[in-house]
Image (cartoon, rainbow, N blue to C red):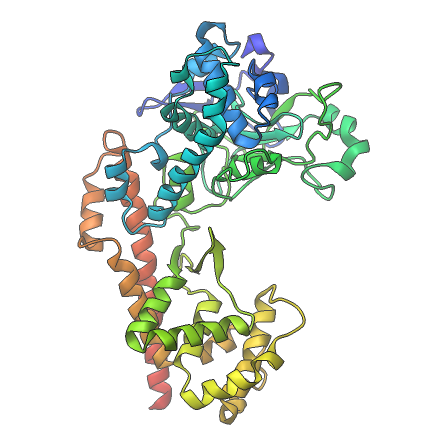
Length: 507
């Protein structure tokens, strides 16, 4: 680090963990505002600083695909690489599910939020390698052995980028940042943030209107992204880079040309006091265990940002079995026509169940429409077009207002229930009917069946006896399974509570 101009304060110490990794510890008191390290941008391994820069540019590679080639190339150079010591320190690959053996990933991730995601990742990356890297191998332009850029080594490089890379600025793109990637993550408990130096800010002040992250940021902290890894579907699009990094520099340097680009130091600043002996943490963002395991290869028991998804296809499958396929198609079609939608990923719709077991409002509305009697459904179909507003439902208030209109048409005799309904709790009282509660309970059972024959109790017992060091993959997959299944349990408790409340009112 010293050879590359990286300055690490005497208050920090690098230690080896029991698991064989490296972490950062405070050896003196650290107080908010202390600058504990500075890192020149030229010290970062990026597609611009790598010896492969010319070949990467000629091949029109961008984003983390370009960075993966840079990492593989510098590794192939061995002792001739300026980053030889850095690359020797970090592992060949990170233990993310992407590089787990296929049969192990299938077995350990069955039913979890990562089950389909990891398979999709592998498919996309295989396409990237064949379309972009294989021609680079054939050209021989990099002067390395074909095995140095193999599919296996591409996967290994991508696992490193997923876990360790930062988006530095518009010139350098994404890169590997020595020292910065040694700070471990702690949800809502970080001590350090990564910022630009004051000199960097003044250099870029004139170009703020072109900045990558926008000009309305009051601070220049690296923004912790909650996005899951980008699949590089458009590998020559530089904008893809930001989705696959741990962080992005706010108001990043704006000069895309090689001449005169900003090379001011990045600074690491203490944002939370740390006492001597404490591990010093960064944060990778507010994300649940599925995202943490997917991108970084670890989980946090009791993570408050955990969620469970229920796919729309699962809802339609349940509806088809209870009624008919035609019935399910018509009800979902009406729900869409009224302007509702769930979350979307890879062209698949799904609904989120929050950490405390609360189902997404749009799911409750869909179940309400599914449960409508035929005459109420027919009324709603006739006036559906008139109920659609000019604007999309951008927030909770829009969704509430829209749903109130739906209920006024579907259940005109219940209009007294709608007087003064303006807030989510009031709307949810209408959405806690016995039929909706029954549907939610069935969906929770179907969703949980995806985990296989082992019960939650079985998973807890296996987790209790599992070693996080010698059985790392199994341990973290069990943490994910247990956390997700607990959320489904909380959903069932909500459903039971709502159902009992309704029955008491009837009595």
